[in-house]
Length: 248
Image (cartoon, rainbow, N blue to C red; front, top):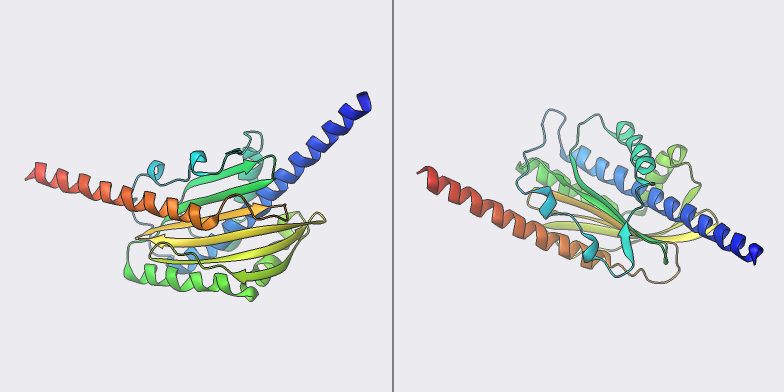
């Protein structure tokens, strides 16, 4: 009986390590991917625009996900935050504004959903650059170069096995890709994508160690986020219009 309990605990520890690794690799991909796109969209002399919508109204919530998902355990958050903080200085000198960072996990399926929103300078050139940069997501060579660039910092031997474009149908502009990654003698699938609605940029990813189709659909999650941004923007405009009427 004792041996059975020990074996069960060992399996549980292995699953927790795998879960954290999945979260790390997913966030490792998502963070530099977004920074490089935003870096090109934002001239170094331009400060990010003021928020036009409240971050609390545009984030992905746990109730948006299939049953079984929860926020990443609090014990992992300091490790993950410290890990990710190493990447931004490697890729850009700009003070880019990242809002609403979220990570949700399913302990049973070892599936991770992560992402965040950001504010893009509300200027035509910056918006055009952001849209143009989204196209590189669909190019296999972009991901090969990104893996090579980040491998020394990842801390996990990860290799890009496959890539295929997976365009999102959402926002004013969008792009996505499905990646197959080899890590820790396992094969992981990552659906990763980005879109822009107005001057709000969204980056999100779904990663699973299973060989089955992920429970969380990137398209469905992006659609929920897009609808929330549209509604929040409309509410914000209505409030500003009401304030102007009161001033008059």
